[in-house]
Image (cartoon, rainbow, N blue to C red; front, side):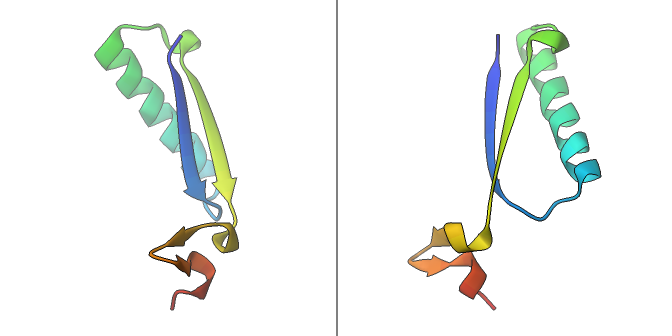
Length: 62
């Protein structure tokens, strides 16, 4: 059972997320031979003020 975790900053539409999990699932199926119904994708969305790069919160970026 392939299990994929994707962490990303919140703000994408449901349509964008739907497309992303389909594409990720298709890639796992293609490259592992696992059936699509066994591929699990977990999306972890976080607020910009909960993620930083180089000591700077994404919410503080211009």
